[in-house]
Length: 196
Length: 196
Image (cartoon, rainbow over all chains, first blue to last red; front, side, top):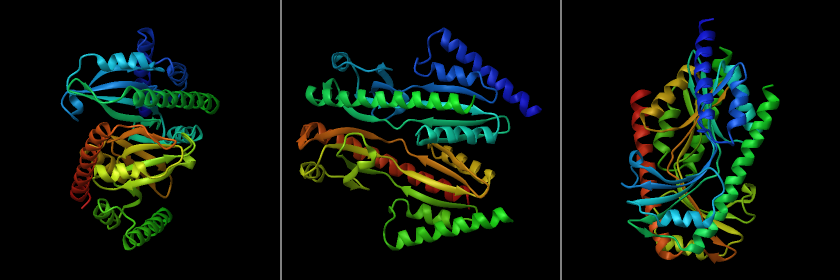
């Protein structure tokens, strides 16, 4: 019973955070229906999530992640003109072009519940993920897509990529982002079937 | 006792595979000491592993992974000349330049043992990984580094990258591969301290 109430408290806390994020439009639209569905189940909750994005990452001090910032960020298909405009804007140090896949954290009440999520994940064709926390009040699962791209595009105000190269790379990134979102849709469909 | 003997059998099988891989020099040198150390413990074994690599991936049919092949593959720092030579060699469809981080699977006897590995992972600064299988005879943990690069470099016999761009990208890939190997060394050191 102790475990029961602890889990319920955590679930309730995350449900409120989710409702706040939805109200403030701080949640990716592609993840909203899935997160809302999971919030409505008895044994699961979602904490952090990102549906996947194309971004220009600023690294003012080389690989030091702590100093990194979002120079530009899109959770959707990107047009070449807006990307190129972003590249031309003032920056310090290095800029990297990145396509990042979705990432989702799901909290589960029991080990059995967590196993169920891993089964659903595999069924949806998601290859990367596992239980990252196993404690007496919850089990936390993290999983991610695998659609990724990453390369340096600018250094000390100098753009390193040719337009032609960048046009093709962006085309491929947009295609991969689409595959990423289709995978999420598949996940949502299977979740709704398996957890109903 | 039943569980005990099942785990022992799996561990023994993987130990033999490891010894075979070492004999046939099929194991990455950067992972050899760590895998041998883990094979010598009572409650852990390693199954598949890769220490991280720079590669040119061939995609004859676009994103269809099943058809992908290694056009070139190096588990070490790469010189520009050998990369460029690799790019010029005959290929079909698309070629992608990739830097892939290390990946390691560790089998654990109990949930407590698995928790220990997750703690070590965090202590070594490894952010991606978790328990991917929890069964009555073993718990399997997968974890990976996060040093990654990926972009298209050739399509239908046409090289898409300028030499200058590729030189800088390879320089950054070599730096990231070095960080990846340093992370592995740190992991090995902490493993040996914590599991002795």
